[in-house]
Figure 1 (cartoon, rainbow, N blue to C red):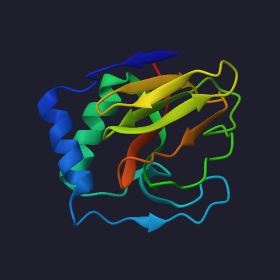
Figure 2: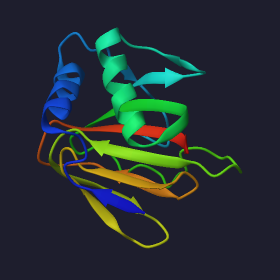
Figure 3: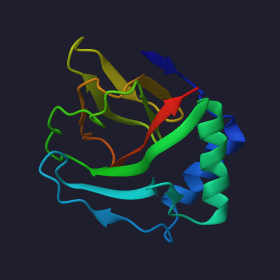
Figure 4: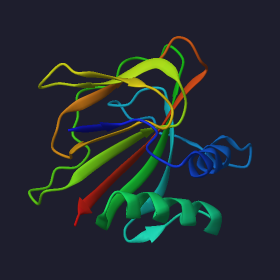
Length: 158
């Protein structure tokens, strides 16, 4: 497991964050029992991007930095204040070694918890946590800001 603060260059991170918090960015209410009271947007799925060219360029920059050879999914989550804790989950059930990268897009007192170790990773903006996709984890919602924003990238590494 890797935790990297200041994961993206400052300008790249600010541009990414501006795109995600823009009033023009479309969110969908997930209504998933495992991720209650969460809005999301799938930005990459089934071999194609689902976003404009500016955001696509930023996502390519991020996946290049991750040394990704192929992307499985890119998703952005917005968890509401005081939402219930997520259920323990794996981002993808796959036998081929793959990685998950969570990038925190804002500061909050919410965190990601890793089941096996009990490790709690604070939601500090522009911090990335990278781990094996089969690692069970959960998001713990915040109580201090209206929404906790994270980007979740599942990919195959070179």
